[in-house]
Length: 219
Image (cartoon, one colour):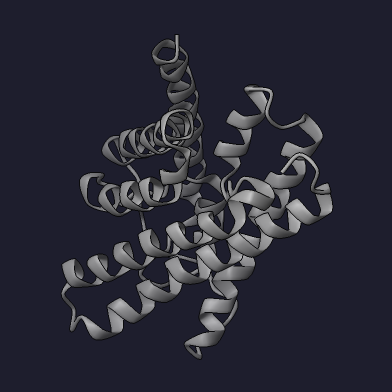
């Protein structure tokens, strides 16, 4: 990865993040359409598709860019000295823009209005704690698996996110780019724009706690 140009790495991050969000939102739309109003079935479809695509995308793009697809992960990489400040800023910028593009692509695939704003309220202490926990677990999964079994990272992340959809009250956004992008969809996966900032605060806090926990565990 160190010999790959920043332009190539940024392209990999953009393409991977766009495909991730197209899957998150697209599977939410499909699950909602086919579930007959059963939210549990819709969430099952959404979680399985998201976990599966993460495993695929990380396998494809990790050798190129590290397959962050997440500004919180890029922040931890920067603070750990694995990514420069400039590269981290580029990664985060393309992740956010590509995530929004992925949402718009999902709308186009299902013949929905491309431009949307979410009206889904996701707020409250339980939701914020859930986002902190979800991001803590995700980042710690990445750090510990990279250290002890790097060839298993793609599977571990996919499995973690699939499970976190179900054990967190927020259904585990765990990603600032995902959170921002999902304000642009008034579908199953959406979040109202006014609710996104505190999700992001919780996600960053969870990532920092995971980094601290890893430093203890890695001694």
